[in-house]
Image 1: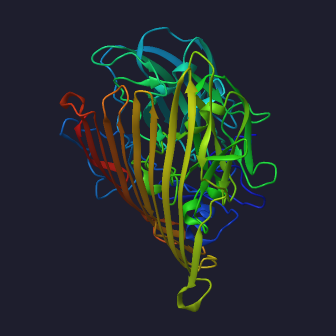
Image 2: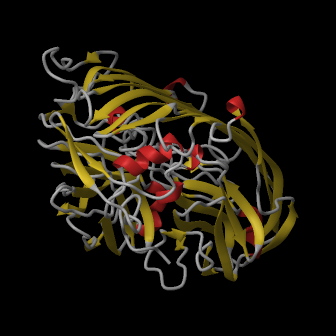
Image 3: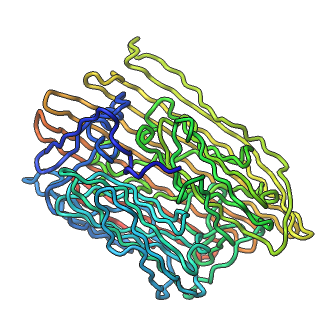
Length: 627
């Protein structure tokens, strides 16, 4: 069951004291939390824990917020740098995300508002709208989310559900005194079975307010239904011979179907643990919630199965990549049998590590956290009837929010089949070597590694035709940490480097069918950081460098062969002195993204490139090429 909605990191733990500090014109939250070991944890304790608040800190500029212009078509958009006679972050531009824009038809969309300027104050209820959705030959459905906020506030989770199934997860940026506006769009075509007929939508922002934390996010969310046209075809049903699904997600077996010809599932089945009202629930460390399980009853004509999984670390496990052990594995089982794993991406929220880094350029995928799509088709032939799907997080330090829905394709008659091979076993584990710098156990150096390689194969019979689906996956994880005074009884420092690689392939063979889908991805994160306390406050120097690369391809099937690639990187630095010395607020961030897709024809080629350079809260250059 889901824990009470307490913001990104939950309630302050027992014994926590919180105070407000003011650095120049900037407000900060200060407090103390448990697990105050290593600078990353101590930074979180010092600037993050408060009722309902995040572990990481926040900065609030006292100046106005002005939206930086965005270049397009190879032009450069720029805002003026902060004048030399003004402190950095006295002006903060509106938040911006590097994620590539959604590609949409030129047809005029039908707009349905599902949250209309909904304010989220102190422990707010969800904004609920029940509406009848339009009928049509849609080519694409896009979720459009706009937020505004002013004052002082932590970053907060924002969640949107269609019925009980989650369709959006993101983090709100931290506001300024004068106010900010942010905007994201997400391709939700893959959820089309939920976006028909009469439906209830629930929008949550896990916010809490008090005399210091005054910010109230106001959210407007709309669904944009785009009719077919301008080269965009109506959606088509996905199938065992055409398995690619539309919509934005981290698909671990190949590219999503092209936006111009999206595939959609036949049904979306929510995973609802007993007593839960929606699919995002707490995976904790107590005996009652270490594993979250949901019982589902599925039709007897299932041909493909994809788990659409949302999962994010919270409170003690927000900075899982900076802990020891750092290895995390989300394990998925069906009726107790290992069915797949997800090795998560290290999201850094808009107040994470050092909040100056993320104003105004936000971390990779932070404003719109995609779901992981895990292929469970090898089990499809045996899934008719009632089954139990379970999720567990290895090395969970308390806690994770996780859950999702099954995206099914079905046939017109009963199917059958069995699992032919399953070499996956639980639990996963890592190896850690610890050495003490200068022979001092308070200065540990950790070297951690993990690998996995497994195959799951199964068949499904549709009428007199039998298809075999085989998933092969190889994963590698490394994490290296050096710590000076890990207990943080005085000035302490930490250097963290993490990396992961993944190679996955799916093959589908059967009568007239030979499909190969592949995905190769990698990420790295580097975060040197420190915590230097004094009698009147603390000094926080930090940097975060993130990189994500993904290359996916599909060959065979009814659509042309296709390849997509995505590369994103963030290089950020922040230094903050809070009390006890000069008012230091220094930060610079550069972000780049390149996205490309093609099915081999010149007309299908898409290339998008963007570089954003920000200094002291102001976007100095925003260069966009392609579209």
